[in-house]
Image: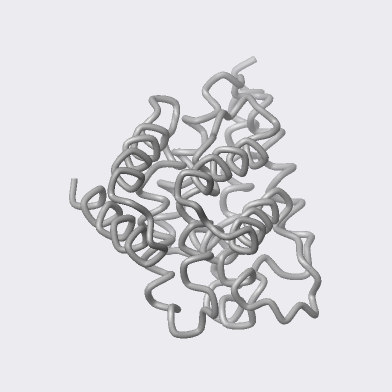
Length: 223
């Protein structure tokens, strides 16, 4: 409950900052809280948004367009179906509906949409000078570099979101995703997050791969 109150407070402040009418703020909070509270969500919930907002406040002085980054945080996972392939584009579409209601300027809409679109691959030019984008993407992936217990909770929550996938297929698919991430030169876009989280994130992911392999081995021994 405290998490919801904190996220709602940030939402209300954001709506004031962008000049959104009170009715828009209330109506869209209802939509956002309902979306992030969907029964099939275990990781992509308001708790994830809360964690990103905590990092946002920590790094706020380095962010050039605070409202843009905050809007991207709120809307980047607003549409989430583990069985769908177009969650990000659908999230952008819903954000654009909000933007019409809030009468946001076109450049803000374009910028927020771009940030959300970049979460599809989490790959940006290594020489980019767009710190806002880099920090936003790093906020989203920061869970990878948390302490081992927090990472385990994250991994367990992701598994619950893919309950429709059988264990063997999940282990294979999840391992492929993790190895693909580990093959990238760096997990994080900003130098700051690479320094703070990269080493621990890679250790966490390797530990999860080992766990998934052990589970597979145990299953084979039972056959």
